[in-house]
View 1 (cartoon, rainbow, N blue to C red):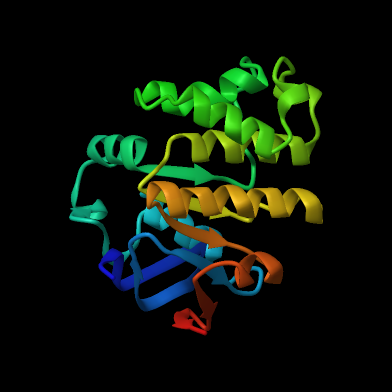
View 2: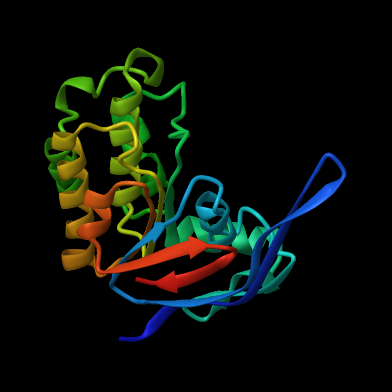
Length: 222
């Protein structure tokens, strides 16, 4: 296995009410290509922050994050954004759907933007995630769990080299969580993606190749 994501000596503090809080201290880990990894830890342990750091959305205080050959924090914001657009898909807790687009166009948006649109795969994901009856609706017209599945379909449709997901099954029942897990499996087996998922779900974590736990500002394999 070849390491695809390499994090070295990562440090991150937050300022709040004039005080500094240490989130990570000399964090080191590697994730191999074409694997699925669960990030586990208590609320407030830094799972979401780590997802944002890897994606280049939040800056570390020090340390390096390499995705393939791209040292993400050595480059300008524009180069990071371009790399993220073409190599990474992110599933946020807040869904981040575009209000002015219906469900179908939300699903298509990212993959069309990077000219990687696959209509057959789109239809497969729509069927798998049970979105057929929602395609003409707008985000405000559907439930939180439905919005979450739309966001997941949008991210997976790009066939990303790296998929980062923050609690992707947080608002889903067991049946829909299983559908999402199956969609992730397609990315791994068919498209050789690397998947990193921050989750509280023990069932989802059990279906992933590697489990990493964040505790006391460090990260360890379990």
